[in-house]
Length: 88
Ligand SMILES: [Zn+2]
Image (cartoon, rainbow, N blue to C red; front, top):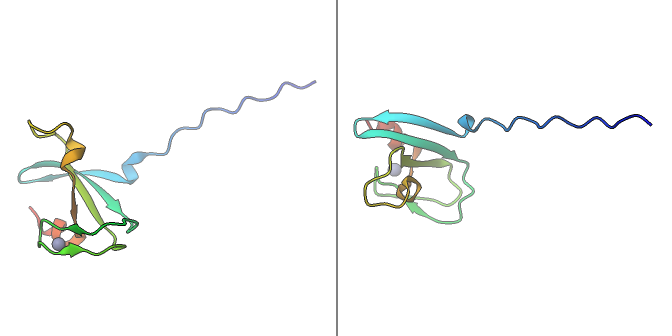
């Protein structure tokens, strides 16, 4: 009876495709593109306008968490893509 070949553990897909680090004047930020599957409206800090539901946009959070927050992920903000791109 032939021994069953044990499948090799597959390498996890690179997360780098979904998230990237960007350097702005006020620090380093993680940026993740959202395909518009959100069920909430978010307000973009760049233009103070709402990001409509279903609109592809960016979620951005600091690489280094602020002193008083539990985790950097708690500081994430939703941005319109063009608004984030305008930021320096
Ligand atoms: Zn905006």
